[in-house]
Length: 279
Image (cartoon, rainbow, N blue to C red; front, side):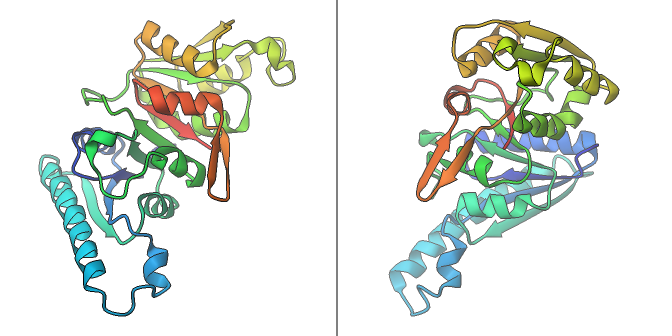
C-alpha cells in the first residue's frame, strides 16, 4: 500500500504552513498527488436550499470576504508548491463548512491532513469541534498535527496503540506507508488482562507479526498502567522521543452532539506529536 492522493486543510495560519511542508514532503516521498483545499465556512446546504436566493447585500459582502480569505490561503499553498516543481498538485476552494467540505473530499483520497484546533489562529468558520467532527465523519485516515508542530522531517519513530479493536486496526492500515518508512515502530498494549478475549496469551503478537509481514520493523511493548490511556500514550511518546502516534478514534455522533471516548478527547486536546487516527 502507498498513498496516491493526499488532501490538506489550508488556511492562513502558521500551522497551515507546517501542514503544507509535511504534506509536500510526504507527497514527494510517496509520489502522490497533493490537493490543498480551503473552505469558505458556509455550508453548501445554505446555497443548495436557496436560503439567500434573493439579493442580500450583507450576505453577499460576507461571502466575498470569506472567499477572499480562502483565495489568499490557496495563494500561500500555490506559492509553497513552487518550491516543489516536480509534485503533482491542485488547489480547491469550496463553498462549504470546514467539516463538510473536508469529509466530502476525503472519499476520494488516501490520507487527510488537518490541524488541532487553535483559537489563536483566527480561521473563519472553524469551530473547536472541527478535528473530532472530521474524524467521526471521514471515511479515510486522518493525520492531525498539533498546534505546536514545526516540520523537520517525516516521522522516524512511531508509537502504535493496539487494543485489538476495529478502529485501531483501521488506523494501522491507514498508517502503513508512514510506518514502513519510519526507522522505529513501537507497538504498545496497555493492560492486556482487561481484554483477554481479543489479546490472547501473547498480547500484541499477532499484530506485530502482521506488521512485520508488511515490511515494518516493529518492537512490541506490553505495559501495565493505572492512568488514563490518553495520558499514558502522551507520556510514552515523550519518554520514547516518538514523533508520530497511531491510534483508533472512539466516539459516535448524535443529533447536535458529538461524543468521544476519553482517550480520543484527551489526545486531541493535549497532543504534542502528529497523531494518525481512524474511526
